[in-house]
Image (cartoon, rainbow, N blue to C red):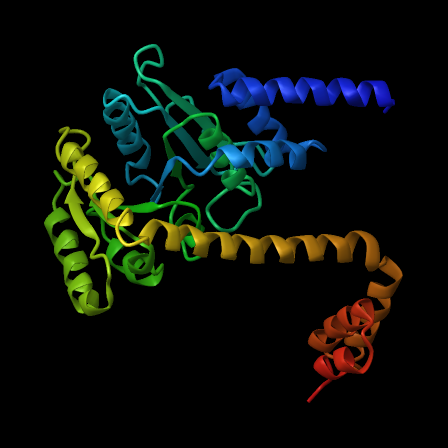
Length: 337
């Protein structure tokens, strides 16, 4: 690419950034698309947008497929917008095994009229990410934050053992459950008690809703002494339009709790530390595989492991030790004890 074309691209990006910071939705959408694709200008975009972020209230929404997460998001968006908040929604959908794109998209997500309510909706593909969030969910949410969205809702693809990343990206986590059998096991197995700030038993007009709410409260009672914040349990029925207002107020109750005694600051600093650790590991991995490790070296080690001359663990340690190249200290660290 010529120097002239490169300068033109950067001018265009600067224009998009400026428009996004002024709240223009199209510019914001284009910036998110560039970051999601991993365009070359991604680091520049994030560097320019980041100083303007950190003002939004982040709400995470997770739960098993079919629990009614999208419908609850839709109703909450209307309530937030009626209170004059500018809302951004990121819905992480399962990805196509062929194209990698989001399968559900926004075709059934939001039925609130954009002319009446000031919200921005974005559907993202989970891709190969295992944590329930897209690889670029955090970056997209920060762009929405910088563009003036005062509330950012992140709806995950569905609950599971590895989907607890939502707690590392949001201020308040809502776990949506249903009366159907199996949710009792889900609560315990997925460790949702550890991440939930609010439990919502949706479809509470169905039989068994009271039972699961009672089970959640019982488990919370057993952990009460260790909890700084005791998660609230709400019963909702989007079909009957019941419990949504109470849930809305419960979210703000948790927000007020976060504002006390530096709780929000502590939570976000912990999230930044976790994010830095993850990104350092990713960067080091990329450097190793793109610039350090060659196919010939890997094939040689595969042969040695196959012949049981070296274990996979020590083969990996050997590569890292050779790369770091810091002599006896590194060799000792990675030697077989």
